[in-house]
Image 1 (cartoon, rainbow, N blue to C red):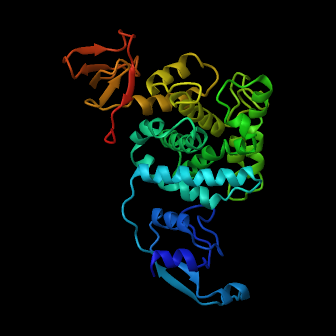
Image 2 (cartoon, rainbow, N blue to C red):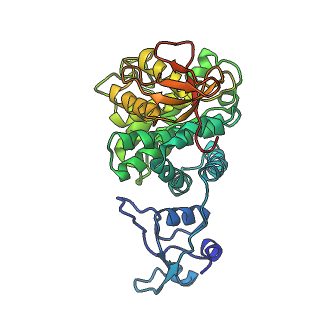
Image 3 (cartoon, rainbow, N blue to C red):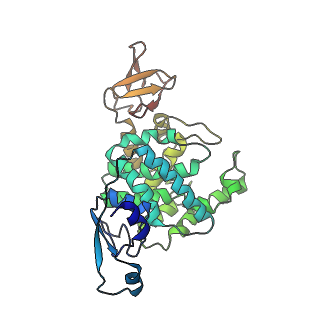
Length: 359
């Protein structure tokens, strides 16, 4: 059967699992494009569907079911998945803003193909702030936070199921922003104290959106609620301190701050991932779990010899040596002059970006 027919006409006849605690697609779900993406991602060759609508209505115990072969879509690039994901997430935000519930199947359909790609090649996270734009920052931030969470969780040795759950929690951490008035959410100038007070309520709104969803683990719900708490008590909504903050919340917190600081905003230009890591480690010391921070540092600075980079003065070069005592400041060779520049001693410059195959 063609995938278009499957999408339009068929209804899943049994819960579909893929080494997961909860179904990736639930029984009686009408198949849409996002479900096809999930089916493709988990490499499912067949799915069971009802023969006709009468079987669904009767809910008979011994209904006949068809075994459908699902066509394998052509290769889709990371950026195509990403851009499509932003478009779909915007639609979901409009629904949440209007009082709608979170459709976890749709969110998973958006995110899982992207999660799989970044777990296979973490260099994609270096391009996330290049895809973003200030106008649509919130949607980019949600997706990017989830992807950075996935990469950190993998680096820290989490199992695949927990990585996906935690990444989805990262995406939904700011879902509560949909309940903040648009005049505040999209304001171009600095927020007033009262407006910032409204923004600080978004973890609570995020929690309320997912509170009764049985497909999200309770520990992930707590992580969503606590992702703006800080170990020194300076966070919100409750000013919790070390010992009372979920370890999962700390992973989302670091990913959230890292993407926010490296992205262009309506009121601030984007910053280098390398400079941001220095700021998180030095200026924000004591606020974040050092194990999580170190995992992200290891991801950002783990550059093979010969990696192409651009410096803050727009000079192009390549990495020649990583200094373990200053990993964000390697020895680089400049393309234009062939000069060797030790960034650990010459602190006037820093790596502004890594030049991946996409750039």
